[in-house]
Structure formats: C-alpha cells, structure tokens
Length: 104
Image 1 (cartoon, rainbow, N blue to C red):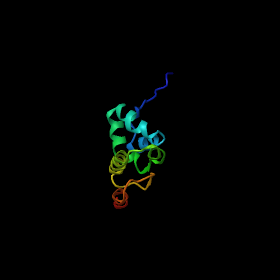
Image 2: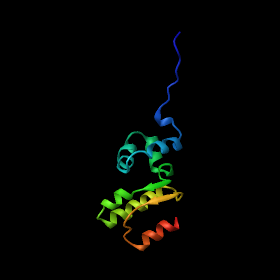
Image 3: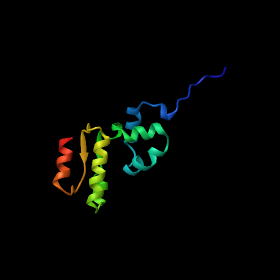
Image 4: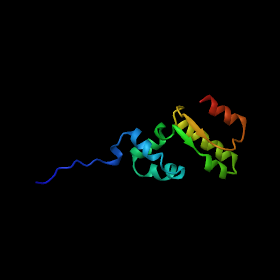
C-alpha cells in the first residue's frame, strides 16, 4: 500500500513559527535574503515576529557611521511593532536615539 503524505510548504507555517526559525539567522540574512524568498517570508521578516529581541551588538560595534546605526535602530524597533523585549546595541550616537528606544 502506498502511504499518503500531506506535504506542507514553508510559507504556510504560522508567522510566529517562522519568526522563531528566522531568529537563528544572521542580521544580514534576515534583512537581505529572507525577504526575497517569497511574499509570506517577506511579510514575516518585515513584521514584529522576528524583532521581539533585537541583537545588533556585533553589527553596531563594526559601524563607524552614526547615521547608519540610527537608521537601523529606528527600522528594527519600528518593525517590532513597539513590542520588543530586549535590544542589544553598542555606541548609540546621541541621546535622542536612546530616548527613542526608551519610549518604545
């Protein structure tokens, strides 16, 4: 007898589940590779599911451009839907960025 298997597509996973999987990827992969796979993955990585815990510590230590760091923090905090629980970042260039994070 032939066994009947129901196959499911990755894009059919719940956004929360995909978000948990995507958290294991690097920041660069989450921002550049994942959104190009399919529309549902792009929606997940653009929404709050992947950004409850924002860890850009290593990336921020390598940045010498305060404007780039400011844009990244604003982008990721906004993507979190203002519901992030933790953020790890180094070298905040000004108090206004710290205030922005604190107010979220």
